Figure 1 (cartoon, rainbow, N blue to C red):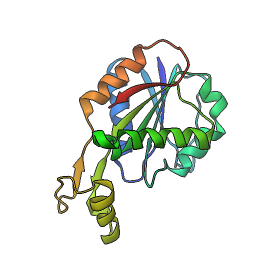
Figure 2: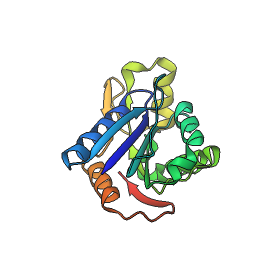
Figure 3: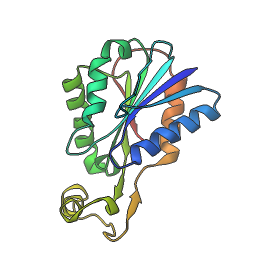
Figure 4: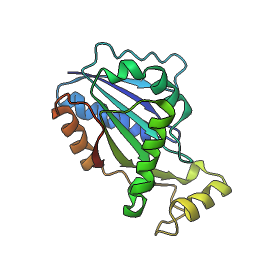
Length: 186
């Protein structure tokens, strides 16, 4: 199958997730095209795709603007294909954050007027080396809410790679039925 992966990453974890998805799908024999929504020369060609994977990180309750603009601009073409949204956030890393992570997807769908066929909430990562003092405090006290995490650790991934691989496999094996269906937390 031909698969297009459209992604937008602010700190690098969603890019890593998109590349992981490409590797998993290529290893399964699929033809995969990777497209960065923030790329100045990005050209989204979905017409010949059999499946489309959309991966966007969440910061301050929103997916990147370039990602949302791309979804809104191409919503009719995207709707003609089975799509999987991978919504990447730290909220998805914790059971008490799942409802909030679901809200990010709902809010994105309202802003873009695009509803993916399926979506999965994917736990992101903390990239402390990229944060200034204020950002570190927000991550520590607002996002992580006092959970155990070493603030001197420059990087900490919460992404469950095995679960993400299972989510991708389930999406590729699924029929073409439309309608919002959560594949769960990846």
